[in-house]
Image 1 (cartoon, protein in one colour):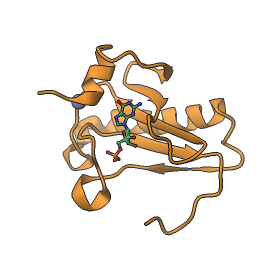
Image 2 (cartoon, protein in one colour):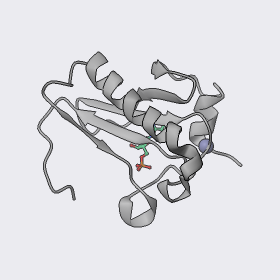
Image 3 (cartoon, rainbow, N blue to C red):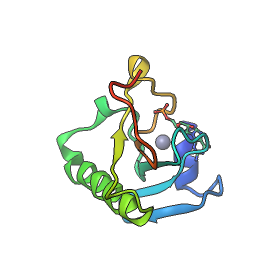
Image 4 (cartoon, rainbow, N blue to C red):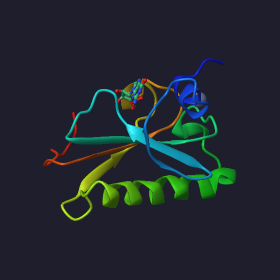
Length: 113
Ligand code: 5GP
Ligand code: ZN
């Protein structure tokens, strides 16, 4: 299996990390859609949100906790921000290793496109 985000986890692609714990990594998106655009990924490969199971309960929580930690770290917590996880074609997923987008630093429109 050749997965871009597994290569980042395995340090085959040098990436400056913003946050790391036992379960997850966070780094800046290469093509930011807002002044702050960070991706939180699990260290373990999970292709889509559809593949998350009850056995991954702690992992899911860790991704959310990492999101709020990164938001505070980057100074967008008080103004606010958005977390998004795209799933499959209609959701616009392009990298098939789950990731939580954190978008902030500007007012975000709703509904998204
Ligand atoms: P998706 O469309 O799957 O929800 O989001 C994938 C995201 O990964 C996109 O926002 C894209 O810009 C980002 N991305 C793709 N390749 C790389 C990469 O090599 N490094 C980083 N940091 N982000 C990437
Ligand atoms: Zn992967």
